[in-house]
Amino acid sequence: MSHAKPIATLRTATGIPTGRLAVWWLLASEMVIFGGLILSYLMHRLGHPEWADAAAVTNTVIGATNTFVLLTSSFTAVLAHQAAEQGDGKKAAKFLVLTMGGALTFLCIKAYEWWSEISHGYTIASHTFWSFYYMMSGLHALHVIAGGIIMGIVALDAFRGRELQRVELIGIYWHFVDVIWIFLFPLLYIAK
Amino acid sequence: MSEHHEVNYKKIYVTLLFLLVVSIVGPEFGVVWVTLVTAFGVALIKAYLVIENFMHLRWEKRLMKWMLAATVGILMLFFFGVAPDVMRHDGHNWVNDAAIAAVERGIGGAEVEGEAGPVVAEEAEPGVFSASTAFNQACAACHGQVGDGNGPAGAALDPAPANFTDPAFWAERDRERIHLVIRDGAVAAGGSPLMVPWRNTYNEEQIESLTDYVMGFQP
Image 1 (cartoon, chains in turn cyan, green):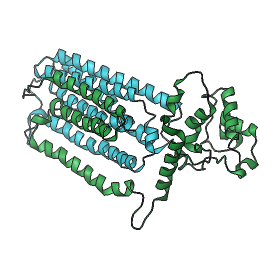
Image 2 (cartoon, chains in turn green, orange):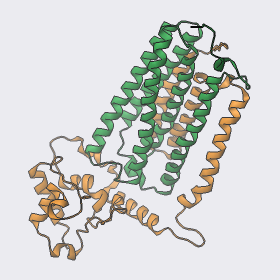
Image 3 (cartoon, one colour):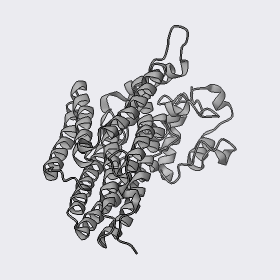
Image 4 (tube, one colour):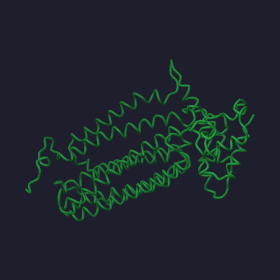
């Protein structure tokens, strides 16, 4: 096997490495998806003051804890990137595993939260607020799951010192997932 | 990969945590503008810090910033194109009756409930069962707090939720049937599956007490 880098990571017309360009393109499309949902929610919420009652039911402590978990996992993701930049694949892999731990913690808390809400009768069909709630946080949770899986693959490679540029790429995606949650937190938990 | 950026990541992280605390504490004051600034203003700052310092957009080529700005532009076009129709409930030549009714019902319900706020919060006292609290928690979303079948979640349901204040409703129903429907769902009495069984949520005694509560709506 040749040790030369694949041409896709070198050739660039924009001055941006191709992989990173692709991730930014992905995120641009994600912005429209999440942005469309968030803005639709926002206009309904502003038009319906009575939704405040439904929003008051969501558990701010759980929302805040998950925000803390995601912010922390973003921090470990950027430390993984820093380690990869220094060429330390093992250290990068270690930080990626920590980030995956954050993803798992987030999902466990989310599962408990949904379980308790659904068992109290607040389902996706009980109110338009809850439809938005489950749709937005569900789509976000799917992104957390996908990110966690990809991170595992990248971490395995990084541990063997391969494809270290991918550590940055999964990191950029992960920070995006964090940013989406930063907006979902006040929208779904704080504003009453 | 080749560029090295001197960012004190720890400092950014600590700042983010501090801002998280601000966004939680701010709304506790209950002042609208403080909530808006601490919840949404702070969210914007947090997002900016992450995007600039963790995603390194700061050092990214200008092309990328324009690309992302374009998606924000498209989103704004969507928002300002649609929002007037969704946020307003009437215009020069149109009225959205359903939306106006939903707001009125919701606000009315909130006044009945008073300043106490979240319905679920009351549940925090273990062992104390109150039929009215349980009704407001489990039933009022569809059946309405006054039992008139006009709960906000019921507006879209077909068939519409039962109206307990309607004499016609009581013409063919007795206490036994109300109890059966609460316990086993309306399907058990040949009704709609939208009225789900509550036997797993409430025990027999609690269902008895809920039955009494619903009977109380009888005109």
